[in-house]
Image 1 (cartoon, rainbow, N blue to C red):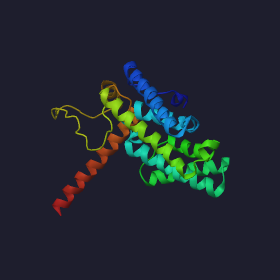
Image 2: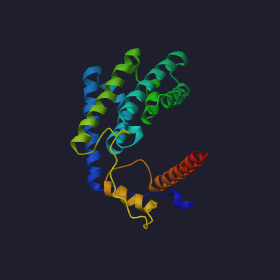
Image 3: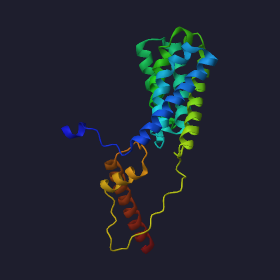
Image 4: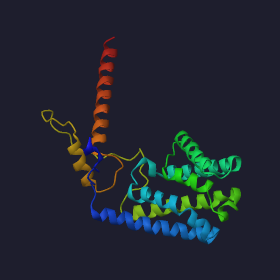
Length: 234
């Protein structure tokens, strides 16, 4: 039980850590600077926390579903609209901030744009500083400017540093030569760990979770094949 508390080994090299760190620093700096030029430094600094959290996903875990373009754009818009509505109806209190985060989460799940930093963004916008509150509904402007600028920075930096982004379900899979029927090709967590290490990128999933997912998929494929055989006989 205690072993579960220890972190899993990271499958990436220090070069990838440095690549992600430099991209996060530059992307966040440029985003906050641009937002400050348009809406003022006080408003831009108020968004620094959520933007920094989003930068970790966009630059370090860009392969994850939570870091894709629609996730950040859709979630920031959801969090902003929900936070402004809750603040107008219930006021700017700690309870309303927590309620806004929960409502934003439901909306993000419904729209398939789940992005964890947006939960913090909803709270931040409800408990905003006077300069941000004074913007009213125009608060959507700096929020979406920050999200869009950070996304464009991630698109440019990741691809320039040979990290494909965004990653969609239509990407061509890697072709692996088939083994002879006599060889047991059952995939294990150790195989997946070696494959992740070879790819040298951050992936928001553990080898054991991948192994479980593959085995479950194999079971479903086996049942489907058996069902097709039985249906053909009938």
